[in-house]
Every structure is written in C-alpha cells, then in structure tokens.
Length: 269
Image (cartoon, rainbow, N blue to C red; front, top):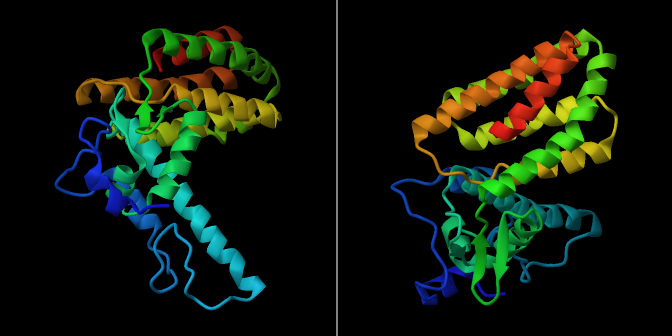
C-alpha cells in the first residue's frame, strides 16, 4: 500500500479536501500523537509491517499485532473527535492519503478506520476519491430521536419501577462528567461522557444487545452540527442538566417525568 506522504501532494485539489491546518496540532491529531507515544521497534513506521527485522519467537509476535491494531483504533478515535468537533466538514470528500499525512501515519489505517465510520453512517465511500462526511438533515435527526425513544422509553419506565435509589445515586458522577464537559464547551469530551451515561443507565436492564444498539443510534445522532460556539455550549449545558433531572425522576419513580424528560432529551440532542 502506498504511503500517504508520497501520494498526497499529487491529489487534485478538487478531488478530495484536506484537513484544515492550524497553528498547532488539532485535538484529533494530538490524540493520535499521545496514544502513539508507546515504544516501537526501531525504524518501524506506525501502522506498517517491519520486514527487515529477524523472525521473532511466537510469544513475541502478538504485541506487534496489537500495536498495528492500536494504530487503527487511535485513528478511529481521532477521526470521531474530528467529526464531532467539526474539523471534518459535512459534505466534503477527504482522501485516506491526505488524512494519513495529517495524522502522520500511512493511508492503510485511515482507510480501515474510515470503513468503520462508513458502517456507522458517519461517512460514505466515494469511489476513486475517498470518503464524504455525511450531512445530517433535520429529518434524519428527528428519525433517530424517534427510534431512540421507541427503544429506550419503555426500558427506562420499567427501570424506574424496579431499580433502587442507591443504584441511581451511583450514576451521579457520570452525569457530573457531562456537566463538566458542557461547561467548557468541549463537544468531543461531552459526546463520550454523554454516551457513557446513557450506556450505564441502560445497562441496568441487563440486556447487552439493547446497550449496543442504543449506543450505535446515539453515536449516529452525535455527528457534527454547525452552531456558534456560545449557542453550542448553551445547548450542551442544557442537555447535561437533563441527565441530573432524569436521575432525580428515576430515583423518585416518577414515570410521567421520566417519559417526558427522555423524549425531550432525544429531541433536543
């Protein structure tokens, strides 16, 4: 597979957009650099096989495979951060070599990460060009909210009747984490904390498939929305406050309040 640095300059400007350059590293790029700081075999390129080194014992081969997988995971995390933060613009096409150059890795782990994002609905494949960032329409967001409500409201109403107050109290730190991220307007951090809170709530139902499906729907609803920073922060703060209100209603076994809060929370997201 060709290296990103060798191919990126030859791409036509109209075929694929480049990641916007800033005066310092982006949040997504910084995440990759921090995660990639673990020791590597001398001379090894991140995400690539090293063919010149002597054969290693079978017991030592597994860590090298883990490192290759780790690079893909780091790029996937970085791309998700870039999507939520709006560094990758909805509707624009980005090539794997150009993104690889931006993150300092080969095009291979970028392609693999982008394929996963395509499965999640965040991007779509554009043959011979790269990947186009999905544009979420208001209708699509409304449909996602409706499906989430159909899936989660009945579960939360049941949990409100059966889960003791101390179990809800244990989730307060997760709600506080969303409030902390919202207070500084950190959308990427908020997205992770938000999903962690909802996963923890639904996990009390004891249904792993429910948690997985609901988390996928939640992630699809989090891809970039354009708003002024001040308005965005206000929306996050209001959204985080609903987590605390939901825990209060669940603790009080107030089914009517739970239903109202959950439906409004999904619509507001």
